[in-house]
Image 1: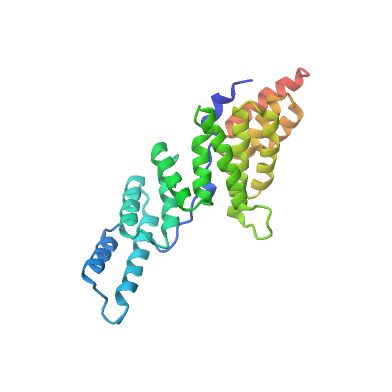
Image 2: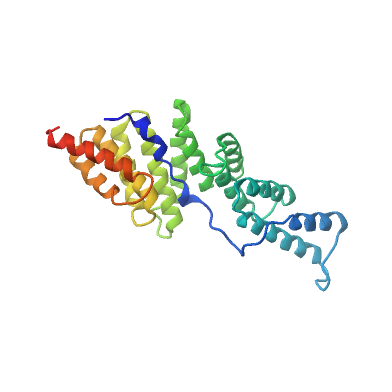
Length: 272
């Protein structure tokens, strides 16, 4: 059986916890920040608004600034917008959403700046200990690090994410179930890295149950990890059943799932 580490580049999936784009898509502009500066320094107001106009204009500028962040598709430019927005509107009602965009922008598939992601994520958790995006993204970074303490931290953060998501609650919506499913999958992966494969299986089964019918990519990742755990324990019949489901799903782990399924089938044919 190939070492687990050989396949780890295929096992990341953070898409389900990303914030949705909101508001209309606006062209990139420094205008919102100039408006805010003028209001703050000169007490300007918009004609026709009357008393309290400055406060309302700040709100308009803040909303426009958030839409600028949300509409930017270039990661470097988006991060620059985020830094400008955070400096201009430190107490904005959009600060949580902007923090989510920042962690996404710094994460895998975007700027891939793990050091800044960890710093920003830890800062976010200090302000909001139950931030699901921060908990999940930090767990996804820590679980890939070679230090045992980092892997243990990934487990802790994932467990906190599950507690915050409350996926079994009657009002649990799709994002909360997805978040909990991804967290269970990360815990299972971390246990496998710790050579605790038997302990990984219940976590991965919970992930599969939560992710099925929600999002194919994290679902297929959880299936692959579960199939790998079964195969490692020479539970090849169960591994084959899980992997046959995984290979049906197009995505980043379809090929490695087929590769592992082939090995499991060979092992079963030999009676192992």
